[in-house]
Image 1 (cartoon, rainbow, N blue to C red):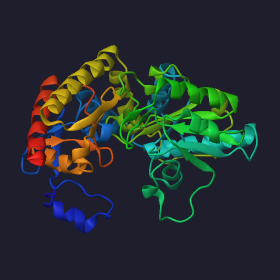
Image 2 (cartoon, rainbow, N blue to C red):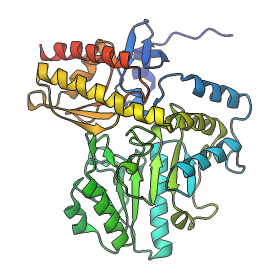
Image 3 (tube, rainbow, N blue to C red):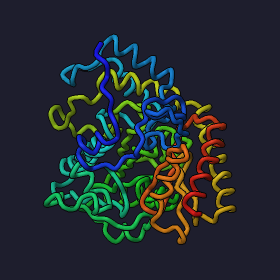
Length: 404
């Protein structure tokens, strides 16, 4: 077997499209909520691959599922179906409001499918002119041109030519703003129950209920982007379950595969029934490898033990952040849902979230940001309590470096 050639961080700047600015170290191994880099330095992981590795790194059940499926059947395409996809689809249907599932590979692809389905449904059940999509400022729905345009952050969609039309953005959590723009030409309202990239801001109960009522009144679909908030992250399997509101479509990805790329769009029978062979598709979507791993992940996440454990771990995080705030007066607000936590920086540290991210890495801690003013924590749902304590100690070291 040929020896692997040595690679360095400089190779990234030479070979990869310049759309990322990764940390200066290269992680090479992970176990649970600990990660090691090329030099053997150890890090506590409070990022989980941006809410992806929900069961930590290299969870034995996921490794086993990948190994067993990897020796059986990898890929077929959707010219054929496969057992892992059918099992996973049924598990998702049994656990949610949904009757039908479409598999893809990323959150953006699941959202692309959802937005296309919403438009197609409205055109076929109502009118070809019923195409308006209402979305929200600071929302994030992916990087395809359709999803990045529905997303409410123009910095991500500007500069690529004419954008998909008939998409309207209004302020998040502002029901009156939605009422002002919704009409009978609206096909869907698209919303994250917890805005992730936009600052880790949860929807209010009144807002979510109001959106459902407005959709019913105007015969529009309620589409929930649960790419980041779903799969146990909130303390329930999906965030919508906290609100008692039934969506028409939801999307899920990130934690669905526990680190293996896979996503799904879930819909009711009524909405899904407009589709027919050839109207949408994906070469890799629903491949046996991804679905086998996702099935194993779902079996573990969708248990009372793990879901109640999310709430316990959230309390530990909040307590630690409150103690840090008492010492450093760092935050003006700590918010979120479950183990999706956003700590908004005080005005003294405005626009400096990136400084804390860099200092944390230097202190052996992997964290995230959500814009320039919010530090985001999205750890494994089963992170050891000792890792939380150790990570918070390292976070304090990082803070001292920045505020000194």
